[in-house]
Length: 428
Image (cartoon, rainbow, N blue to C red; front, side, top):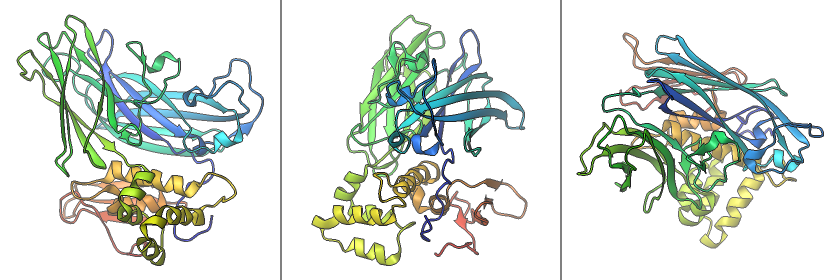
């Protein structure tokens, strides 16, 4: 694993995970029930082999039978804080996760997904979650802003949305059930592959909208001007009106999409300010290689050398799939196995960069933030300086284990942070 082009893979056993949240009205309260969803892929945990113990939890989220021999142990703690750094709520889980074979522990398509819950007041909050691999002793931390609207009165009352996987089969655990339907949270908010559609769960509170007759669903993409407008009829006279929504996205392109949810009356008049959020329309490698070869090659810029990129760009159409497979095989740190750890991790970072760092004109992996993230992974620490007298907004990313430090400045004031010289090992 000493190839020089890409040195930022997490150490074996490093617990990398995905994080998302949604908020609903807490029962019997005007506060919000904050649900925090997390997802850990199998290779990002460490395992020990032992016989299953009576009553031990299984890897049900991956549909595994109860004949486990490989067990991971993790702990996750989520802290919700106010803008003045006061702790509002703490959630935690300490669990074992069992799989039936060594092959499953290395399967990047296998994962566990779970949720934490806490009742919190509506406000602008910060969510910080830390995952600890109890076997390896390593940790990983993610942070997300949480903007919670009031859950009673006014024009703001709308719960969710919780994005879910439209094709996943939910386990029997009640934590994933909504109105009798099992919904597995889509923690990455990315929809792609064979689904090619968006799916979410939301709640309309009838006491806040006595004239509510429908939920208007609108999806937009800034680039390409793609648009979806739909309405979901609402039942009348319930305290909580649940909405489970699935829809194809014909013509939508890879990239960010904005979701707008509005409650309307029988005349189509809006009853609330739209609840707005975003999700990601993803790509699959097979479609990218067959339909957009130039982009598939361009996406390798953070791992491939100039000669490799030139060779791939000049590959005849009938040889492209074989050339692409051969390229990644040459990067495989364990060629004797079916899994290619670098390929899986590389595209995980590409997707994450797209989700976090995309701008109206550039995909996340093409930005300077994305370039550093794809090459080196999640920083150990980020210093954010959005407002300093006599200075443009800037951030400093620290990678202590790799002895690297990167400075980004929003020189133009448009949110496009540019990497500053010296580039600490990055050739530009």
